[in-house]
Length: 301
Image 1 (cartoon, helix red, strand yellow):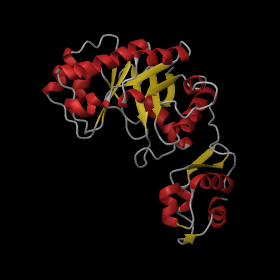
Image 2 (cartoon, one colour; image 1 turned 45 degrees about the horizontal axis):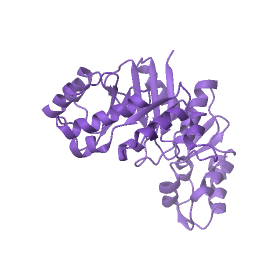
Image 3 (spheres, one colour; image 1 turned 60 degrees about the horizontal axis):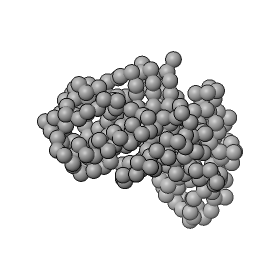
Image 4 (cartoon, helix red, strand yellow; image 1 turned 90 degrees about the vertical axis):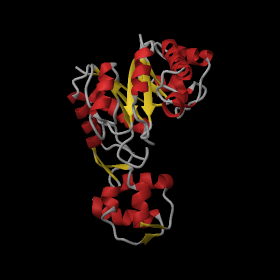
């Protein structure tokens, strides 16, 4: 049976005073990927406080600072080693092996990359690498040689090889991270995860609705059913998501571009992207939500 760790990139949106955000987050999820370490270097005291805040069985992963992956590069030089060992120390303090490397699409492996990986002391650390450039056999061989988890977005592709653990950073099929997953897409993520035959699968959601997506997937794992996305069904569900931030007047194409990525509850246990139905309404300018919902009622119901 596959063991899942499910969470999001960061916990700052869980703001429920007077409890710390991380405390509230850890009462819901069993895992979080720390984004903060990609941009900043937190103090040891801060990292120790994070560990004390969560249950003993809660799991962190640490993103390596962009100084290494985007500025210096994986090179066998003092500055690169300094960043890596600082990150490794964070992982030790958090009692986790997972260190995530995210290299940009412009990154190309060289002999320096292999030299760097062969000269670091990675004992106690499980490297996870989201290699955003084209995956070649050379890249695959390098990761396999150093037992590095090939991190991909399982909503789009499978890893080039599998280990006992699979790690996925989930952004979805939209522009950047502007996306929300339907129930069918969540099931596809699970299918691809289990096809790796890994004993442990770590899912780190990063879309704009990451909290909702992660919670729905977690509930599916526990009960076999997905939580509803909204409080309504059909056109009422569409009205709820449009009311969040839709602006008017708006053309059909504008509505599709800005609102189509959102998910609505079509029926009980059935979801779809709003774009499925916006594509079928008349091509005209809409002055308000009421006009849009009038047309959506026809195509949804």
